Length: 210
Image (cartoon, rainbow, N blue to C red; front, side, top):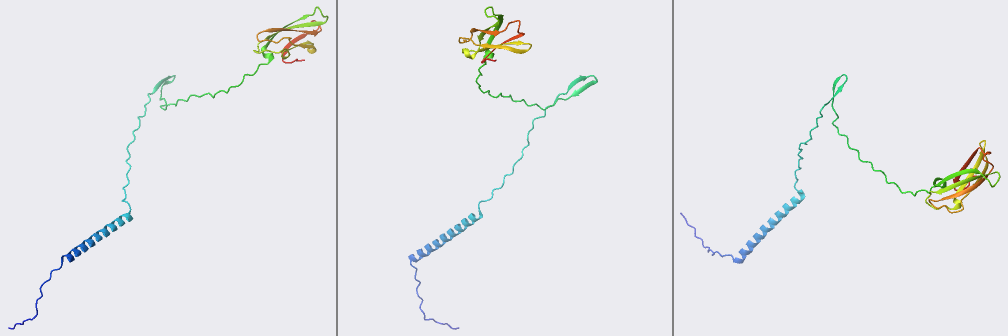
């Protein structure tokens, strides 16, 4: 049995300073924080690229529709010569027609009536006792026009016919203004005699007819 002796010296263990330990711990924490930040960044980027989560489509629920009950028509019996016949009236209601609105009437001025329409005429004929061979026509004119008529606006025309043909004619007008509701007399001398004429005609108008 042999023994080996060493001549080396054992050096004493030296303790590391405190500043070195703090720096190492700080560096380790920084690495952990940096890694956590990178992981969170990668997760946010993946969520943005994937888009919002799909929302499940709603399924429409169909509910049963309630329908009003169909009215039951009561059959109406009608007595006929051949027996009894049952008639079922139509259950369909007839819509009520809307009232018809009459179009508005436009205002129009009232036309002025003609002299022959609003001047009343009464006349008579007689043989003249002053002038030989002359028939006197006496006409009475009454103004119903509602306005004054000047003398030259009213004319009286007298005509004598023989065997259906016109043989003599004369005309005249009043000398005064014809006031509404008043009358004026006009006398016309027609040549000839009452026995000679078969027919006499007297008319009133706005101008002489013959």
